[in-house]
Length: 156
Image (cartoon, rainbow, N blue to C red; front, side, top):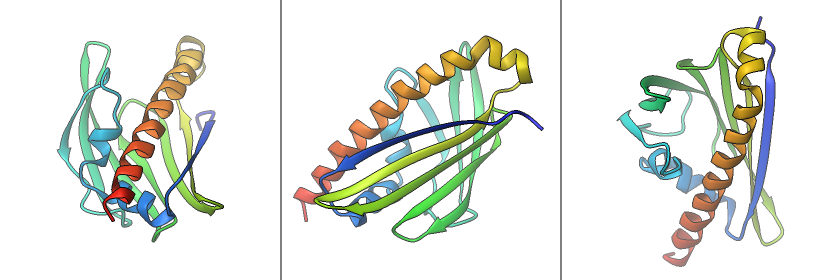
């Protein structure tokens, strides 16, 4: 069994939790959330956030274009959803999103449980780099989520 790492980051948003949920349910959300420096090719967009939904895309990992397939494994309507990588570069990858109501809006928490490929060698060669990558990626994702959710709220 690979050694699991954990990463978590939250953002407070000045919108209702339902808007945060609606943003994540949009078919274009995955492409919007991807940093511009890491373009992806979406092959199969998620039809919903429901359990069993699959997402397939290709991402650039160095000079390679790697197919990645995710499957939604949990969904609590309006509040939380989780997906796991069934094909891709990580030995293990589970991404949970929790949306909580707070005073003045919502808190979105992304929690990843992952294991790098190649066990101790993968951790030694890429562990710190992956953490820095996750920090940059989720800073971008949360900024996009804020921008899109605020725009959605303004159009209600």
